[in-house]
Length: 172
Length: 275
Image (cartoon, rainbow over all chains, first blue to last red):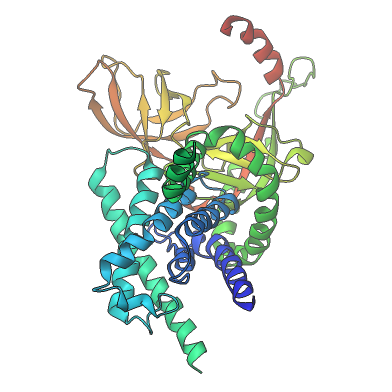
């Protein structure tokens, strides 16, 4: 039960941090790290696929609702991320035993290389979806791809800092 | 029937995913309509008050440049003040209210949230319905045009920026009065486009573009920008003109909201033809 509470508090804090701090960074006019997706990334391995998709949608939907941007754009990207998560876990693991007896994806328990390949692929998918939906056209195709790549790097940096602080606290 | 349920159960995740995804896309497409309207009254009230607190703090860091702007604008106004002129003739001036009826009222508002990097940008200002702000009023900055009020809540309004794919401003070239339309192409927040000027007319780099006054929203001769590039459009007989905006959209903090006192009267007249 305390575990559920922990995830609820974490999701609320991440959404608020995303909306009121990170969405105002606007580095070079367009770059904001989408740190809140880390919530979806570090949900336990054993979560069922359908609740995962619904949870992802809700996270994206609340970020949309509070940030006053185009409605539905985070929700669509997040639901895609949640849907693809199990396939990507299988893809980046060499065998099922890699994650069978682990609790949740995490840079310490799974190893930094595994975790950042996994996070990198999903965050890139998220950014691609986000920026193509925002521009809503395929004109300027390579510019959009470039923006997505740059913002993926920025988001991964934020996730790295988040994971570092989280693991340092828990190891103490 | 049982087979159908078994089938649905097997693909439950895929179905849920597709439903939610399609729902999100519908939200994006319909964004400009009811969704935004519902949101501006609830979520914006909340995030608006937080953003305003934040702006109260961050405002201090821009005081110097703010003061420069204000001084500049004060000087501009003092130049127009009657006390700055020496009367050189003996004529007597009288003002008559029945001849000079005020058409535009200006109100000052503060910008509490703004963006320039997106394809569709909005501003949030700290005045709303209680301060007599209504949708479709013009928003100007000391340098020039900013946008149009889109939605109002009790104490806040969201403004459709000129940097929005739906923004179309009726404009004219100040030097010779040719009429065109100013839009933003979504690339650089400093530049827009002036369309609908036929190719046989003479346009030079450096020409000033101002509002035409043909809409009921903007007063006439509000500055928009200067022409930076003159190119013929290959596909038709119109120019492809690049316009550099006077307003620095990255540094807007104080804006004027303009109310046209005759708007309802003019609109009721023209609405007869539009149907």
